[in-house]
Image 1: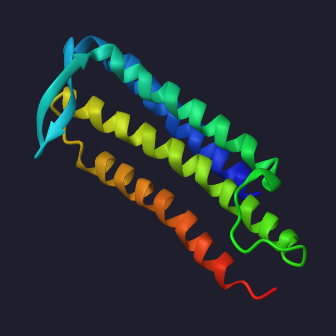
Image 2: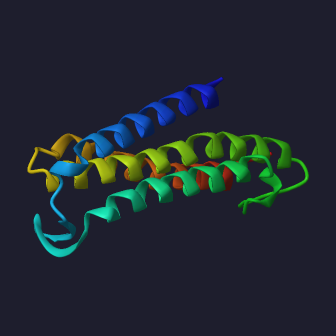
Length: 152
């Protein structure tokens, strides 16, 4: 059930972002900031770069989604015959969250780039993107700690 909710949220956010990108296309400068140091753009690229991250988002979402179907292919710590079923179940749970949070973080990064290129406030989108990246980094570490402490 949670996977379906994540799918609806992801597809909604992705679609709204793409619609906004297409509607704003004529108002986006031909060169946009693509690298920043201390909050200032110091690397620039074509506005067509704004289509790259959504594609990467979809590829990441699909690739990580395939892993959920084969939990035995994940790397496990402390895997034994006695605990492999619970480890596989926890691996599936991890892989339910990770593809969506990762893909959403990429979409929000792109939304931040888009808003910044248009001279709009992009703090909320950047904050969401950074928070989601943090969650994507923390989830596997929490899982690893759980698996190392597993007594079964």
